[in-house]
Amino acid sequence: MTLIVDSEARALVQHEWLRRVEAEYRSSVITQTLTLWMTQAAVSPDLIAEGLRIAQDEIDHASLSMEVFLAAGGTETPRLDRESLVFSRTSGTLEDDILHIGLDSFCLGETVAVPLFRALREGCTEPVALGALDRILKDEVRHRDFGWSLLAWMLETSPARRALVERSLPGAFRNIRASYAPAFSGNAAKLPEAAIRWGLMDASAYAESVQKAWERDWQPRFATLGIDAEAAWRATP
Image (cartoon, rainbow, N blue to C red; front, side):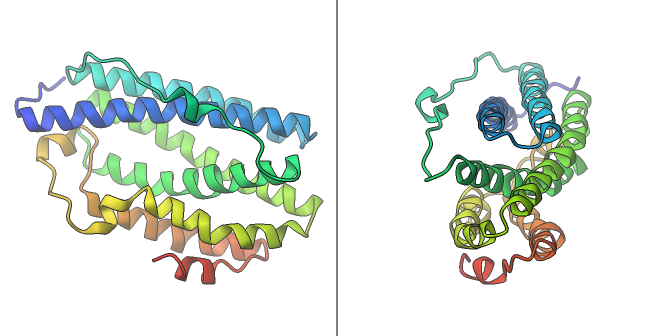
């Protein structure tokens, strides 16, 4: 393990990896909610089983991220906004709520996570951080594919849901881009090299990951499902 001498880099690494711990816990809660609703809606059992496996993956990711945080000298504990982790039904049907979470969290969120974690891994040399990123990246590919399999199943059982997806896409793209607002602002400072070695990356790389997700996954995958995502993408600069 390499000690982080630079105090700025150390603070950045600790902050980011603790944030990742919290994000992984949140992802597990979202996935558990999704799989509960999928079970109530009698979705294909293989998809439910995969969703439950993903919920455990996210807990494993939180544990790995916490190991990196502690190795970087962190001493805090995760702080989660518990009120924000209560997910209520918002649509007219259970299936529509399943569709919305699957679209936002998996077809978009877990899909962009693949190029994102790949980019984070590229500059990482610290063994404990690299080990965590290796496991997370491997799992994110499966999480991404789960989301698209779920969406395909939802559309096969009710083709009319394509219209709902198309109506939801502008807001969904807007939300995913808002998550990367610092990257799109162009005003973020360059990271210290020591922070990059611990699995962080410059803000501009986040924007590049979003663009890669559009070109490699979102546009072609939506098109394969008979959904035109171009207008929604162009409407959310």
